[in-house]
Image 1 (spheres, rainbow, N blue to C red):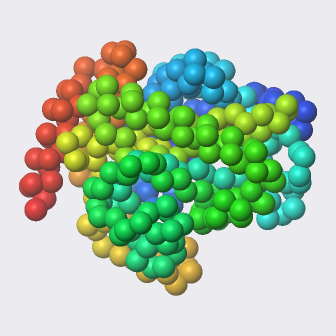
Image 2 (image 1 turned 45 degrees about the vertical axis):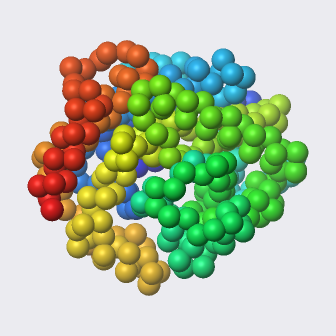
Length: 320
């Protein structure tokens, strides 16, 4: 359940039994942890749902278990659900089963302009050693090996962790953490290869896991979509990043950054402006064209990825 998708619980989860739920993907979007933004992106929800469903089914062929059950409709997906237990409340204890692992695992294949890595390095929130780097990276740099990051999942604001901290919070032993890393890298490899097949570069992304009743790691939420991952086409972002980039040019962004720095929240004291109609159309075409190319299924009469991104480049030129 989040600001862009709804969850209907059909049967509740317990420690020994998975529940059943239905994700409904909406056309809403969210940036900078603000929550629901003023506009909607037509067919965005369906595009995300279809891409995620495709990825779950393909990953299953590779032996990656998930909570995916079936695609119910264009924007609805049936899933197994696990318990949500909050470590900070003492609800999660060692040896428990059938729970959401309270971590987000991030993999980075390159560091495009806009990557949080640059901000964290500048603020001293991470080090080159912690990232496995030997020299200061530059925007657009491709990694010889993926960088692995981990952050909290069930806190008001996500914060990055060491792997030792992550293991303690998630009540996982070293072998389970190693398994989690290996699965994340395998998922990353699948997404990177699929992106290359349709002419995209897979820069980075995130995955979330659960422990099933047998205490086996399963992939949960969604992965490999334009909201969870950053893709590029000839160096230009093909993801939700284009919405972040737009709002970075507005006064609203400066206000929410100041509010965060002062500990006041995430924009409660100001309201974002609506998107230009032209950018809404371009963004909608981006979600739909990538979905069609990724899944190999036609659902909309939309321009190709290349045509859509050329429209976006033209939009940026006019903005200058």
